[in-house]
Image 1 (cartoon, rainbow, N blue to C red):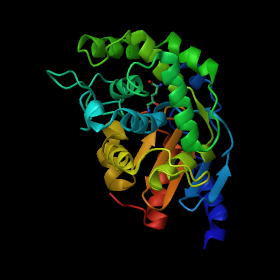
Image 2 (image 1 turned 45 degrees about the vertical axis):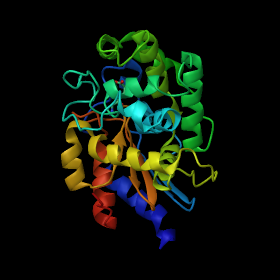
Image 3 (image 1 turned 45 degrees about the horizontal axis):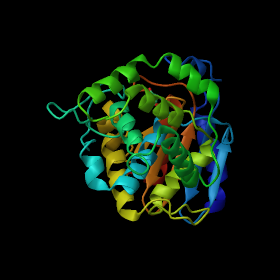
Length: 307
Ligand code: DON
């Protein structure tokens, strides 16, 4: 059965390849210029097998796919109460870059939208960590999820920094509510650095499989975060990971998932596999068009609908 997976993946990639709809992320010049035809997919099982096809070793920036992993690190480092005091767990029903703060408290609605993710970035590490220590913890933590040392794409980072007005505005809103307690520009820069980490589709499948495998990387055998953290992360991915498309995704695909504007997309089936796809053209929600088609196929072909 498993020997059929590589042929299956190649076949499904060929099926979606003709679809050239959507556009690369326009608001980050380096991403706008990405090669739009790239297309890859990978499965990683909880017993450590990785199956990959197409441009599965091409590197691209992780972008919002970093959010569930950094949420996991924040929960592991600071505990549930401290993180929940600053970031909620309710779907926003709005785009990823909307302000989406709770009336009154100013708490971002969830950690998958930018407002919540900027906040969870600020919560990584021990209380009082400086920005460099925090970033080091993020890079090392995400690398542990991937099972190899990840590097940063400095040009993507500089490109996003030059046009970060919206995230900076969100950062200042968070500071005005004391959800951030330090210079918002510094936190936003750290968050953008986090988003600029380079991964391959194969890496993302292993990272998703680590979520599926109760926080243990199936290749390295390392427990990256404690199991209760995983449960929380998967629930939030399931309800909020696809932003204002969360309901359509839950009903039509039914796999806890997270997308990124460089074209990556991951899905996690607890106890089974991590799935990742990559194709840079995006739909109106900032999610890869061909990635969505691939996940529809995977879900219906293999009966993966679990939500
Ligand atoms: O903060 C941003 O706008 C980007 N660094 C990440 C956004 C993103 O990937 C949204 N997801 N599809």
